[in-house]
Image (cartoon, rainbow over all chains, first blue to last red; front, side, top):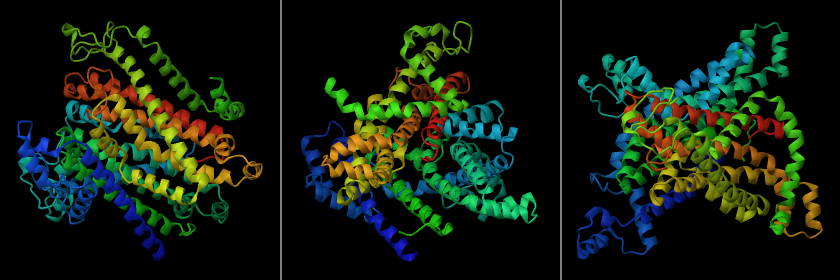
Amino acid sequence: MSTYIARRLLMLIPVMLGVSIVVFIVLTITGDPALVILGQHATAQQQEALRQSLGLNDPIWTQYGHFLWRALHGDLGRSWLTETPVAEEVLARFPHTIELTMVAMVIATIIGVIVGIISAVRQYSWFDHVSMVGALIGVSTPIFWLGLIFISIFSMKLGWLPVAGRVDLTLGFEPKSGFYILEAIRLHNWVALKDLVKHIILPATALAAYSMGLVARMTRSSLLETIRQDYVRTARAKGLGERVVVVKHALKNALIPVITVVGLQFGYLLSGAVLTETIFGWPGVGSLAVNAVQNADMPLVEGCVLLVSLVFVFVNLVVDLLYAFADPRIRYS
Amino acid sequence: MKKLLVILKPLYAKAVQLWRPTWRRLKKHKLAVAGGAFFVFLIFLAVFASVVAPYSPYSADFEHAYEGPSLSHPLGTDEIGRDLLSRIIYGTRLSLAVGVISVALALVIGVFLGAVAGYFGGQVDNLIMRAMDILLAFPAILLAIAIMVILGPGLEKAMVAIGIVTIPGYARIVRGSVLSVKENEYIEAARAIGLPSWGIIWRHVLPNIMAPIIVRSTLGVSEAILDAAALGFLGLGAQAPKAEWGLMLSRGKAYLYSSPHLVYFPGIMITLTVLSLNLFGDGLRDALDPRLKV
């Protein structure tokens, strides 16, 4: 097992190098930074001086070497717009995205698994039909549209939940880190926690819809397959109650493929956060990236892409490892 | 033309052979048939948009802006009085075009790379698949956004970006299928009589891995339509005044409070389109090969 983990970790290195090359290429061919930074009215001399100081006149591989060296030391350059260090800006936004993604994942998993189990146990009942049609609609709806519909209904028409944002600013809740919900719990600030939950429900549910549908379908089909196996029949033959058979015997094996689906959803949710955050004015990496694209702030765009990809690759690796751990039948080769 | 027909013959022959049993099984799958029928309806709308649509998708009528659904405008009008129904009907053209073209692009490159990697193996396989791993290391929408930053906004460029992002999915499936088909005796026989590798891949390998490729492509079209709508929504895809569903949503969101129909209807259309393709794709998967899991 440990050699398997080590080998997988080693395989990450070429992938991340490849990612950095792609990011570097995008950064290099999207235009002359000297023109963007100095504007069109700068003299040729000024531009040349800036190019010299930014190292843009060096050969391309030297530039890549510098880029990689700086990136490895946590220096991703400065935003062209605000001139703050990119790494600092992206990292400050990251906790917001993680919190949104995690809440979405919890919602998707809990509801998806429960719905899947009920559908499987009561196969072909009205609940099964309704929930499976719902799951299909869930995987077919664009996240950004669902978000807008939620805002239109729950915020504008019914006025139950806030339209956008992270927290009510009048509460004066200013925690040190971006993990607002964790901070509110740590500080026992229940008023803020209630407000934070109100703000996160809509974006997290909109983001979770797709994964929820997928998890529900996966749980249902996996459980149906397991229930037909001999050992489950044996458990029934022993005279065990249906509940015990399903929960204690069948579910354990049925949930293994569900784990993979849930894990892989984390990556999907990270992507989806780009759209959800834009709609709900969520101060995460997604909305940062979209704003950066709109402002043509290249270092910031690339910083977001690089860091999110890093997390994405890492999470996928962890899922693979967890999967191998959960199912001993998987060979580590 | 004749030459092209000769080249395409092995794939065509296999398609004819697959068609009958698949259709027989697919017919029993009611939801899949419904999905397929709706998709055919969408193709009809796209082809005959100029006949079906009651108005031009571009003609503004400021006196009737922001109107809700009525008899003269069944889905209402937008911020400059254009008929929403007509715009949605014309939007079918763009969305189907994006879906089909970007999948075709990814398919050609992905199948080529996957077949080469799977058939030849060794260093070539390693090189191609590691390159695919790198593409897969990016969350899809972020990579598409990064590519759009290089290419600049526009629907045609969105097709290219979505195509590139989805290549690894096809390459992986094709490689896996090629690996399993390659071990068959008929491939060994073809090699023994001295057929060149490309001939074997084209005439004996590809026809036998068509089922998973067809299924993947059907579902791929629905994903491409969703991605294109997302790029349009972010302002990176189709540009105004094009009647593209994602772009319509993006413009409609400013009037979400006063004229929610501008957001409701384009979104419903995207959902129905994607849903129909997903239903059809799921059914097709079961029908093409009952043992197949993609």
